[in-house]
Amino acid sequence: MLKGFKEFIMRGNVVDLAVAVVIGAAFGKIVSAIVEGLINPLIAAIFGKTDISGVWKFEINNAVFSIGLILQAALNFLFVAAAIYFLIVLPLNKLAERRARGEEPEPESLTTDQQLLTEIRDSLRTRQ
Image (cartoon, rainbow, N blue to C red):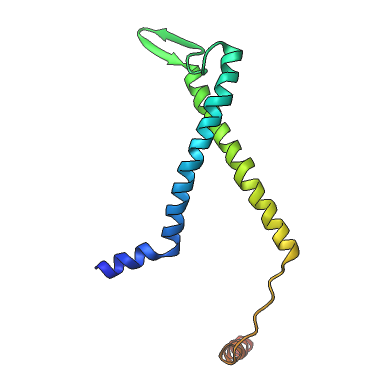
């Protein structure tokens, strides 16, 4: 049982996922700092409040409605998505394009066994 658990933990995708979670948490702090240090002060300058969650807030029969709360959540999502796109996705896509232009992978030569299996496969295809 422990051997299976060890194999599960040592798989590449589990380790990659763990690294992604840690990096995502660290990047989340950067995005939060941008929102708190730059975006919220801009919103405060425009609306007179530190965030827009209290904007367009009204009450009907003791039920409190807050359109600003929905807008704040939507804006935070857009800020996080924009930061991830412009700081991570776009640069990595550009890097991948540069690598693709400069390096074309060379086809590997087949071993004798692979050549034999390829010939068998091709002959079976022609018989059908």
